[in-house]
Length: 166
Image (cartoon, rainbow, N blue to C red; front, top):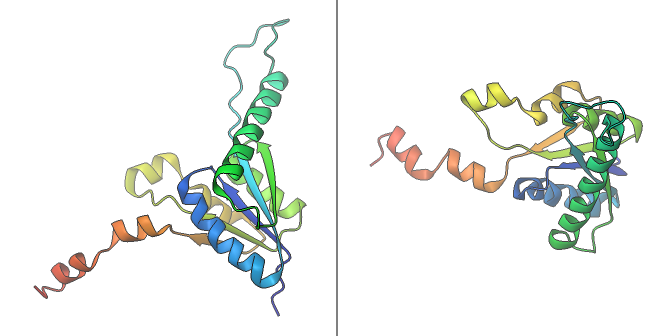
């Protein structure tokens, strides 16, 4: 029997990630599970750091984490119901690696994350965090395509045109 107690929901604080949270919340209610909303701030250290300058990599990392924490808490307050048992978490680093590491270290039972629907060249150049997490995770991963994306990919008119129904 599947028993979900700890569910990880990575977020980039976009509307797309709210679709994943909707699925995860349903599982949370069904299994009485705790949700962890993880935001990973991309670590892009200063290009030039001079000795003695207040701006070393560690200071920059700490400021990045503090700023991301404020943003995540604001996102939670404005978009997420207080009824959801949710623990907001911030990490700094490469998103796919940090998501995988958090899922392993914190013994998550499931990762639920949204896809952004990038295709073609944009997908090749930017990569897909969701795809990397699916490939690397030891924890089951449910990817959610937000309804706006589903609708823009395939519409009934497209099917009718392709099948020459009209």
